[in-house]
Length: 542
Ligand code: VG1
Ligand code: CO
Image (tube, rainbow, N blue to C red; front, side, top):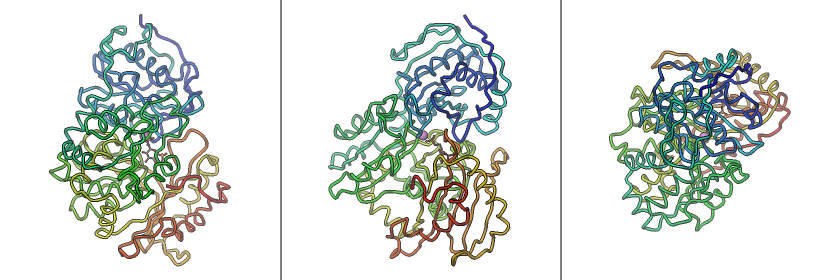
């Protein structure tokens, strides 16, 4: 019943910022999924008879890939495999299940905020027993294995019926199809004051949550419209579709522009929110004000104590390096440590496990806490709702008061998407080489105080991660960061992160691009962006 199949390696199976991501057509290559999944299991030890969690964001190829994962996992000796009904599990829900069931790990099928459909992207990510993405040493071992693999083991059996709840046998293993929402909803009920939020909705508060035809639909409908009593129609695009309805499941100001426009209308909803393909990102727009993810992190950390799950306060805050330093001000006020990590949620896991941080966040619309080991889109919306229910002020008032109190970090990210890899690599290389000469250099009225290539020393396991982004710190507190995306599937994407601190409340009301105009112009000059990429302007501004 268990077959051993001979195979030959692929040379392009290196996991990036968040798992292996490729075009669907690449994953459809014979043995491609099998090789990668077998390589994951070849790098793990001690899982015989153990539990594995499997689920994905419902995108095109999700069901096919899940059948393969189930059969390979069963053949490799997992005793029990839990899979979300219909193959659905949001990334944070998968993380929660790993933890709740003491599972050995989990396989999450998702390309997250990348587009889906037959010509879109697909992805596979392995999460370890703490519920978080495998750390770099594991992903590098998996990559090494993919280059030498010669065979994989697979159970020869009919496909598992993913739509039927309950247990079935798959070769030597037991597969249990579970409701994808139940345990996640219970976790949210433990963290937040649902009675208080229900009262907020009863008072006439209006939320619009766009699930973007991706994985959060069933979760949002059950929690907002079901458990919290928000009116029907609160959740938009609530049914997961294989092609996300033809939309781009990245909840940013470009792809969720309709929500922004809705929130800017005078009688618009009090809060507009959205999540991405796999449910780990969040977009927060109050009536009349978009909340920059970096500000959202700072605000959530400053107000978390208003929710029951965080009533004891936060022990530390962690943010990825390119994320604005708004959270640093909050950490200083709270007298708790602030950790600066490389981009990607896998770097928060150790800090959370060691009890060194409670709230974590990234500028890319990712916020989360020690409740799971992934960022969590619905969690962020619920924490906002709990804060709004407790303070009974508008989103805009809360943000403006926060700026007046802590100062405002004007912040923007400029992405140059699908440029050539050669050009992008040459740009970063040239920046690295110019670092020694950049320090102290006056540029258009500004002076660079520090210039480096960010390296991270993990305070828990002592590991080092180098070349995580070029940072330019200016004497007036401004900052420009350059790095290349690790999640794209075509060419390269250059990300430029621009930030300036403004303590004066009378000057905190400017348009962000205007407030940052001098640094934006400098960011293009210093790096020679037009020269290396052939682009005069970014493709996406967030
Ligand atoms: C991007 C973001 C990063 C995020 C990652 C995964 O990575 O910048 O902050 O953790 O996506 O998010 P990169 O390497 O492309 O900049 V998701 O929602 O794809 O799990
Ligand atoms: Co995501």
